Image 1 (cartoon, rainbow, N blue to C red):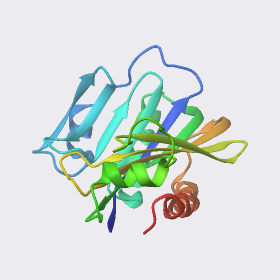
Image 2 (tube, rainbow, N blue to C red):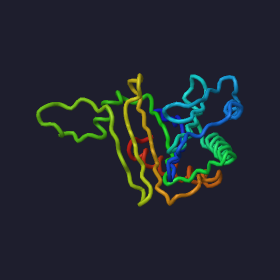
Image 3 (cartoon, helix red, strand yellow):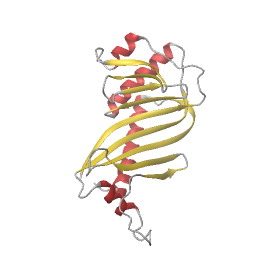
Image 4 (cartoon, helix red, strand yellow):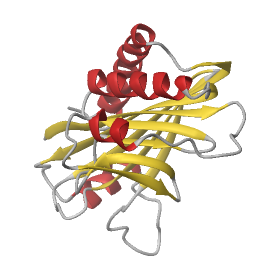
Length: 208
């Protein structure tokens, strides 16, 4: 199987909801990713969003109840998140979070059989049905408890449009006492620890 990590994300849930959706100046938005010609931004149902036109990442979302940043790697994510938080502070918006998630997307390609059949064999009890033959599994959600304040939630499903591909979304959820968003050094350490825990669980569930 050909394994690849697609993206990483940080999602911070505020201690208290804001009464408004924070916004950013056009100049700030255009230069955030250093691609002013293709950067798009504005208010959406998900809050104030900044992204690259016709691309899924990098992606910033600042809503009344949370902040999220999605990127291809931890370094890029940390740079964007730090810049966003500092810009919000300039306008008097200080973010305190009661929970945050370190999230990942993975894919496995070139599996030995269609993913829905592999999932059925891997995760479903073989004699579950007595009166019919179970043929496939389309999606499964799992939750693993790391400790009293950390959970890893996984959604596993066939990769859309790829017969022999598997897609996994991972949410490493952290419950906190209200605190500021982690600084770059701490965030780096958190991602290192989280990444190692995630890789161990994925190896046990799916293999390399």
